[in-house]
Length: 168
Image 1 (spheres, one colour):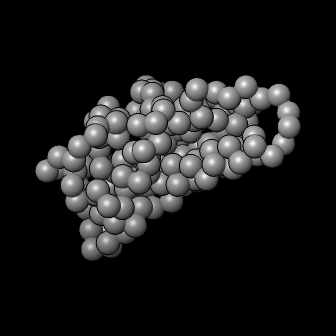
Image 2 (cartoon, one colour; image 1 turned 180 degrees about the horizontal axis):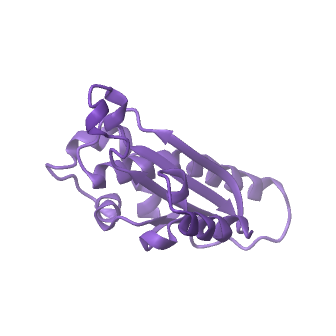
């Protein structure tokens, strides 16, 4: 299983419509694939205002893992019921993130003064990262397939990302 998560920090903000509170919300996008086939994808506004790109990316990561973790648990349950050959992988899910600060916060064992306000709601997945069930890998912004769900792209980049996960 692979998951690609991304966020567009306050991407809708425009000076002409600065009174609209939805303009400062960031957009989450993620793509979850199994055996190279897309199974879950999402594009939605985040529910609260974020203060930095790292925070918006971390919230997107957390939202994506709310979908991934139950899928991991289902796979573990099926392994104990269905008698078929399926060697247990060391890593259950590869998660790709294009923001280095977000990866550092997700893999960190402690809270910092700059991240403690997001502790309760969004650190739920740290045990899965710590146990190795979820492994977070950096990915370049150009290769981040979830980017297609967060903001308008030029035609060439859109077609390139579409070809990566749809194969057409």
